[in-house]
Amino acid sequence: MGVVIEREEWALTPLAYPLLSVAGLAAVLLLPYFSARPAAHAAGPSPSPFDSGAGPFLRFRRAFLLLFALASVVEGIQSVFGEDEFVRCGLGRDQMAARLAATAAAALFPGAISGVISEKIGPRRVCIFYWVLQLAVGTLKSFSALRCAWINNFILALASLAFSFCFETWLVVEHEKQDQKQDLLFDTFWLMTFFESVSLIGSQEITNVMVSNDDSGFLLPYAFAATLSVVGILYIRNASSTTQHASAIGSYQKSFFAHVLRDKRVLILVLAQASIHFAVSAFWFLWAPTIVADGRYAQLSVIYPCFLASRMLGSASFPWFYGATAPFQNEDSLTIAFIGAGLALSIVAYDYQEIGTLVILFCIFHASVGFILPSLARLRTMYLPNELRGGMMSFSLSLANAAIFVFLLQDTHPRSIANSTILGLASCGLLGAGGCIHMLRRWRKHTRQNGRSL
Image 1 (cartoon, one colour):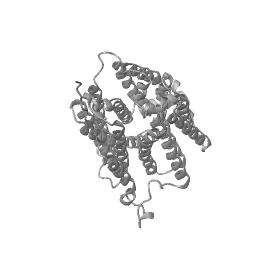
Image 2: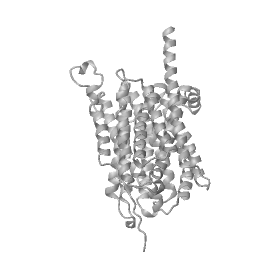
Image 3: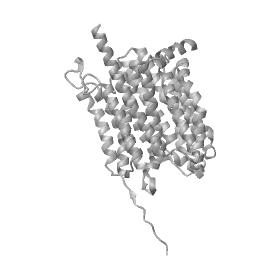
Image 4: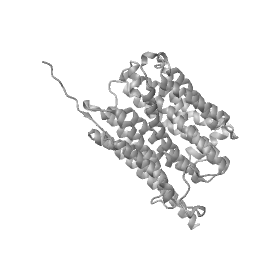
């Protein structure tokens, strides 16, 4: 007589995702009624963050956010299958780690110089290049026979690197060209993170609707991503271009050394950006194995949207914590966010938790990430010349990718580093970044006091 082992499935409460989504939307919709009102709007609420700005820049920003949302949808479609895609290709854990490590190594040098190239040819052309990469990989992965090719992972790695800085750089260049207020730029930063989270949730729904049997030989989600890439290319080609005054390589190197490598304030931002990128990458590699460890069972596809809704809420809270009416200085709020994210990962790394507790901790981590990303973009605008933005961001991402490559390479050996150790190191990086941001706040306060004494 056989023994039947009952497996208990952990179920997420149905109210979790709606509550997080409603909280994020409420933070956006209620913002005009609680923000500081200019004299022109003293009789009523401030204008919505979607309607701020002069005519030309307002039109550009709306079209830009729509284009960025489409790019986020494509990013989500390419990554929604995650580890399951490698399993369908017949790859084991060691083979998976070896392929990802080889891809990270191959993309390391192109990624390091991609920001410099962006400054030379202009961010608008880099955005076109990003869409071309997505078109290529979407076309290849549309066919089941080409879905598992190694070149797909390499192209996606380059596309993800370009996505991380090309749109932000393009926005900053256009903002500077039209001579708009900085508050409009800061609002666009958090709206980008908000739209990205919404689009990633939408990409999951689109993939669920379009997914079909692999035996058909043609995969609709990737074909849809390729179609969106064509739309992105056509729009940017028809958009008005910004004149890019490219400097010589030698002068760019001198400027980069002077304003990035020799400026301790910008180096702090480099390390902070690298730490958050490494922590997010470590999370996406390890969150699913952590939740289902020891044979536990849960529907990961239901938990995933809650993380993105938490990120929406974190980004929507950003405008409430900067400006004259904010309860804290932006650097203080950013320090708290880094510490919150670091503590959440540290608890996951060094203490066994039930699935419900893990989900709460990961939601806290993502809410902190949603606040951190626009805050770092704001500080880059304050301390870094715009012409060095792409180079600085690609440099920080290369540092994080080098660390990711080392851990992926270790995972291919029998004595691989434990998952808890990787999460612990990511936690230490976030806590260290929080301390560095606090130092940045003290340096700026000290500079202001010296200026008053003079």
